[in-house]
Length: 465
Image (cartoon, rainbow, N blue to C red; front, top):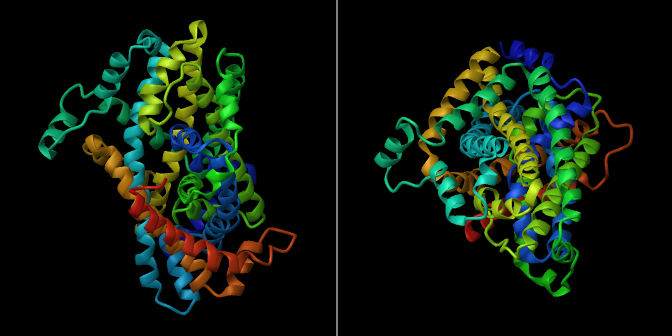
């Protein structure tokens, strides 16, 4: 039965390297590219932050991303099956490997449920952008803040939260359902017909919208100070360890090395796909999306002297709105373009997060794709409705504790447990040129320890990504 499950997954894989890259980029490009990256660039000083970020993007893409794509393709399974097969290859217990593999699957499911709440906010704001409700708020922070507060309320106790969540007319309940429904409809169409096809439309559209907005910002009066700030470099700032810590954290989570989504997408790859090239392109596209968001938000905030220190969801749903609404006749079209682009980023991420547990149900319980997708989305809907008042704490818990452990365990399986010749051959497959000689030792002695460091720093700093 396991062989039949594996055959089923192989039949429904990515049809092209480009489709895989668009799907993988979609898993990387998320809302943190929009609400966190510009804030960090602003906080730590333009190029002073960007230089460390570029360094870590190269390091992670050329080690962790390549490893996770290769591990998934080599095994033909998601994390559970991949870890089990890696342990077996290394002469250890397959069952223990599968048990360890459940950690990144659980992390992906938890992250997906939290993302569903945030996607509800994005759908709601995209709707208001089209109807003109966002522009109608004007620049009144009380009005804007109260609108977001109605969609993302806080509750002190669990009974109050449950009462608020399931009360008729809950402000965000409908839009969470919409977000879950869109993810479900895409995913039941399969890997090539749903995930690949949708990402081949959404990701290019996201870049087109962001590029248009970035160009428009050039012609908005007052944006010059923002551009000057972006391209300034403070050599002394590079000596600040905190700059490097947060550049590393942002890059680590942005490139989605968590032992889950990249592994399962890798399992759908053909043998002719070039792993190193794919990983490099994913890093370039992901970084480009973050840079475009930076070129939109920092110049825009500079026009009114706004404080970019207010990061997180508040930047995306509160602090940027008065800036957009101050741009006169183009305010509405800017809002539409911006929130539709963010919508595409969010949808492409959530389908990746849910794909990992869906594939596990197919792999281990031999469920049909429709059944597995329905089970995961129903579970995700119920949990996301309940956790609304604690979405921030929920996401912090997953990103601080679970995601780094997932990345560490995947790296450990590949570089420390699997036989070296098998691991190197898995990466080499599909490439005519020999893989770089330093890849294996670098991954083993640099990337894997970095995953542990991410876990420790996350706890110490209360989150670094």
